Image (cartoon, rainbow, N blue to C red; front, side):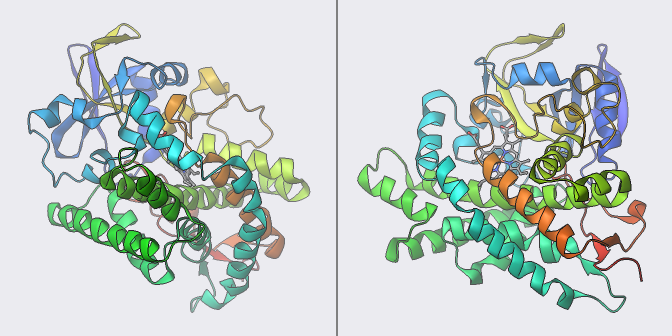
Length: 415
Ligand code: HEM
């Protein structure tokens, strides 16, 4: 993290390894409501670091989500092998505006209705139960189990793959590809290979579901396209499937990891959670989203005209980063102890799922998965304990994904 000033607006170079994610988020807040940030490859962008200003920005119709409006891309200044390409240059609802956005989002919300999500509870409970049954068998020589790998990862992976009709044998590769796009330290060759392999994998899944349709989201997208090819192009179909697969598991995986880590390192909060009920566990989920946002930063928004925020003009065509971790601990929104993990706090709306028209479409599903997984884990293993010093946990090397690479625990307490 290096800081310098040009024309009185502070500039912060963001660390793609995520080595001090919350330290960096705190620096962003300290530097002011609007900060210039430098991304890998010396690519410049802006960050709006206060909750209220970011909440306004995400609903501002003068700001586009379409990367074609980024002047640096139009000028050819951002190569296709830029490490953040997989997060920025996508074709789906995340990068669509207005009517196009509505069209792409509606095709998914017609299938993933609130009712369908609620109906998934028994199946999610079953999935969690089976994964918990297998957990002790993953203990290493020192008796510890990596909870990220063997619990937090397979739960949302199984759920999203069942929802989208992705067969079991594709899951290891899917995991590796999602991991690659969320990493901000990939080499140019890895970026190119990943983009190619994503395309190949998605086409295999779409071909499979075309030949053998089911009650899944991919089949629903194929039907929507077959009924009206103008309503959904093949590229949009594949892009939407990719969005659901990537957004649908990496984020929820981090939420579960971050919640378990928070409880294991805050014994008083853990005691409250274990003594509580469903409402208490919902509070654990909400507080984790706020305090340790699974998507720490997200790219990007592009003003269609010069816009002024807190007295700073952000020119049309520049990129704006949404720093969800920074705003999650903004004390003007969350009070003087915003940096404390406190499941009893009166929640005052957090932006961990974004906001405005692009508010996370999977939020109810993510909340449900965490609300089932967390109490089930602690009920099965009430003495769960970290197997390493929390300071030794290694962050995910990402500007976007905020979590740790492994979470070694002793299932039945420290030996
Ligand atoms: C804890 C888990 C999750 C977090 C923290 C999260 C976070 C976010 C955020 C911050 C955005 C808005 C991005 C922006 O424009 O700034 C978003 C959008 C989205 N998320 Fe999630 N997400 C989670 C889980 C999920 C799941 C489980 C799914 C799929 C089932 C999903 C699907 C989507 C989709 C489709 C969008 C795009 C919505 C649109 O552009 O209209 N997310 N998510």
